[in-house]
Image 1 (tube, rainbow, N blue to C red):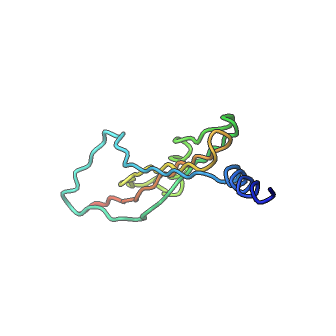
Image 2 (tube, rainbow, N blue to C red):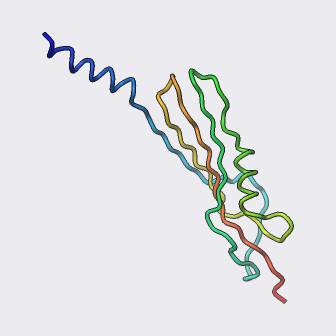
Image 3 (cartoon, rainbow, N blue to C red):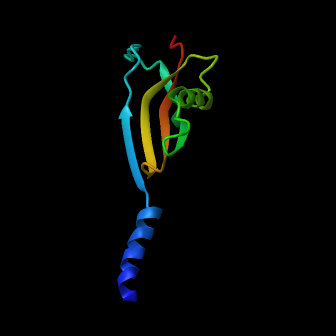
Length: 121
């Protein structure tokens, strides 16, 4: 009789302590700004600069991650203020982790490369 409840108890513990992970990434094309790079008047300053924002929910209550916060952190890390620099190859990754619907964490990760333009003359 004792041996029957052990697999059920193990399954219940596994179900309650287990979690799920989901990850998704994509290349954003929200900007309508385009630059023609027909001349080599730029150099790559930094690669894989990132900014991120995290949200955590318990039973659906809690803050969501902010895309604006992630982009602000990206710009701060890229040091693009005050110079002829631009962000290129911008990607957004979304990672989910948790045990829905009880709790979950969502992380937005924005990555980009930084190029600097110079006068070729």
